[in-house]
Image 1 (cartoon, helix red, strand yellow):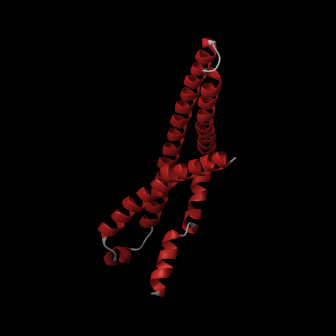
Image 2 (cartoon, helix red, strand yellow):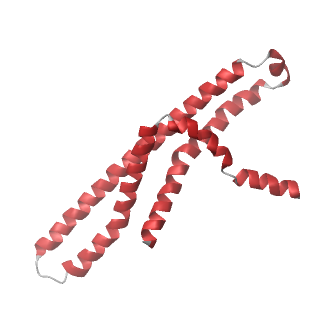
Image 3 (cartoon, one colour):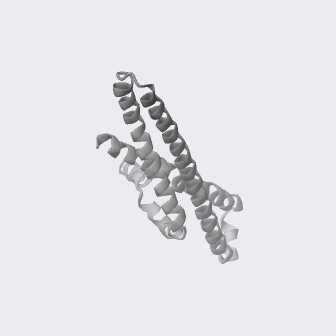
Amino acid sequence: MAQITSADERRRSLKPLRRLFPYITHYRTLVVGAIISLVIAAATTLALPLAVRRMIDHGFSSSSTTFIAEYFAALVAMAAVLAAASAGRYYFVITLGERVVADIRRDVFAHVTTLSPAFFDTAQSGEIVSRLAADTTQVKSAVGATASVALRNVILGLGAVG
């Protein structure tokens, strides 16, 4: 039973992801672009309900239709900013994930080619290929979409509490 617990702890641990930082730091501009896009998208998402509340609270009570028209135009602009920031975040995160995985595959392939022929006599070639394909796909998911969604949810949670 103790082995199951330690295996579960290893699966839940984020420590192995630290090995990805050297690969990620090669693409600082993509990381900065993703973070900026993420913050803009989160801030806009948090600001939309406030703008709608203000329009409902103050817009319908006054007789001026220009107030409502201006707020509606502002809401459309905010939606456009949100769309642009989300598209930027998606571009930066997906590009970063693809480049990190390409670098990892290159390094793993370089390492595999240095192994002795005895290694290939004992190891199954299908397992090696499967590891190269499946494991790097998991890394791409962790670097790309999963990390981005987690960070976005943290920012939205902090912004909602604030």
